[in-house]
Length: 224
Length: 217
Figure (cartoon, rainbow over the protein chains, first blue to last red):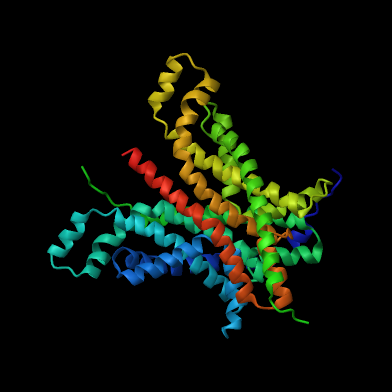
């Protein structure tokens, strides 16, 4: 091996890399929040909606879960303009991420909702709460608590898979790396540094989720 | 000049399916082989071995697959090897799959009740025999549904090989789209082809899981 490593190109463009990492964080957090909303609505529809609604939601989940994220991005970014909807790469990336994570998170949250004991829901209805109130005040919080680990690891996977949106040149971390690479030809150095940044981001999100759990869900569940 | 999307373009996409399947098969076989070692290391009694396997898994699960493919692809050049995109994709996906399968199978090995380990060692079986005759046959039963489920993820992951320039289904879609400029049709067909590969496996995985849940109730 007679290759001399040269990290100068990487160090010189650290502010550019930081910008890319920041957009990755923004896209990820945006997609997590919007995806969570989509997923809660779809999970509600899937567990208690009328048949046609359930059918549509099931189709959405199966299509998204059985096709690659990259193809979904291409369909949204290249396909939608032919229908007259033109999107910037960043917006297309965000939409693709929301659509993608929404489907996975729906199944996770549905499992959480189904883990709530029937008696709790009946008790809520008996107290005169409307079905949506039962969902809002009795079902959703313990349901999210039960599936919290699965949900947050899905979110971290989402953050990692956001690197794929570089294929449509959204300006996130991987795209930035590609740009620096094509100007300096220091491919290995750049990608190893960027891989390290992703690893750090994954750990940061992990810590963030642990913090949120402590704030929102760390209550006693006294079940004998 | 823009070409029209004709039967020939469709056949080109269809023939690219074989490369997606071939890449998936190689990555699965390679990933399963290395993954078994990782799973055994992860459940080992020796702390250093366990830690090394944990680090390996966290490294591959904590970084994007695309970066792993880039690093294999460009890393080979650094080492003075000339790896074509096909070999780089196969190697990258193998490493990635081994980490995921290793973690899935660790769970399956640990799902075998402790008493089985104790009984087997009380009967005088040492580690290889204990694993081969007592633990792994029971772990395999638990492992089948999530492994089939992972296969779906693996087939979808092979689409990233398109980005490093290996012509599988997604790359074929890009090529056809560049010539015909009918993205909705082309990527729609590509998506349908992936769906036809993945959906049966998803259904199978769910069915096996239900059957297993019934059997152990």
